[in-house]
Every structure is written in structure tokens, then in C-alpha cells.
Length: 194
Ligand code: URA
Image (cartoon, rainbow, N blue to C red; front, side, top):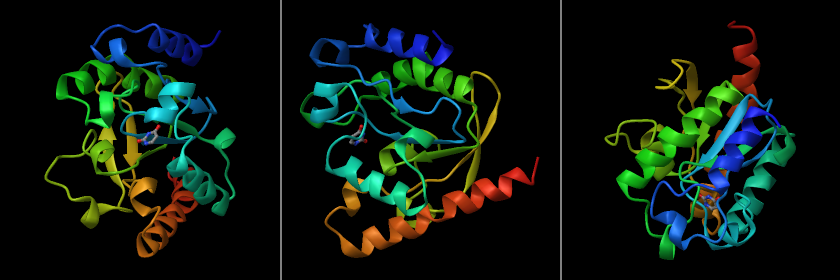
């Protein structure tokens, strides 16, 4: 069993916060343990909670479509959430739930994955990495550097709109697709920066 699988097992058994009492399944994340790119949503929804997999509803289908548009699939990237268990009635996770979950799991997953690029999906996920004063309408598609507080590793964060927000909004779909097309360009550029 590798380190990522070990963290996933810990997540599935986690009782560090009250979300453990209402979840059906914890959702550690899926995809490649060797990817340069990690997509991070805010928290699992109802379907994800039932099946233990991230982004499997309508928003996930659109995520797959945008990945395909840049010649990637779920198997090429890692997809997870800031908080690994569904908050009841899809409420926002509480600050304490976010703190406990990120300290125990998200930063550790990133330490193992060592991605080049973190892509928070939506303003809630974005604000876990960037100051709350930032507006997603102003900085979507703009790369920002951050440091893993656990390991000191540096990552580039590319905040993007949440696919659910773009599902029924044609112009936002186009913005999101355009932002997505920056991902392979950024990865390519990073290869030459090392
Ligand atoms: N929305 C999210 O932010 N995460 C999921 O896993 C599904 C929908």
C-alpha cells in the first residue's frame, strides 16, 4: 500500500470532526498519484457521499468534458475536495471542519502527490488557498504561488470557476473552458523553469 492509499484509508475511518456522524462515505479523492495537476473542490455532494468518489454528478461530467478538451482524463490528474465528507444539506463546511480536515489530510495528500499545479474549483475552494479579499471574478485563470504549511513545498494555484456554476450559464462555460486551456500551457512552461 502506498502513502496516498494509506491517507485514503485514514480518511475513510476518520472521526476527527462531526461530519463523520452524518456522512455515508468519506471521499478521499481519485486519479493519478503521479500527476502534476490536482483539482480541488470544496466538499462532496449527495452523490459523492453515496459512492465515495469525487465529482461524479453533473458538475463532474462537465469537468470530464473540459479535461477531454485539453486531452486529459481523470486517470491523468488527481481530483479531491478541501473537506472529505459531505456537510449535511450541502451547507458550507464550518471553519473548524476545514481546519481539521486540511491539517489532517489535504496538505498530507499534496505532500505525497507533489503536484506542480493546484486548481481550486469555485470561490470556496479558492479561499482555502488565497486571501478572502480575492474575488474569483477578478482572479480566475490567474496563477498565484503558495506554500504547503506542512512541508514547505511550493505550488502554483490556478483558481477556476466551479463547473457547477457554469453548467447552465453559456458564457461562464466558455470562460471556464478558456481558463482550462491555460493548464497544459502552464505545465509545459513549468518544465522549462526547473
Ligand atoms: N462539487 C464539489 O465541490 N465536489 C464534489 O466532489 C462534487 C461536487
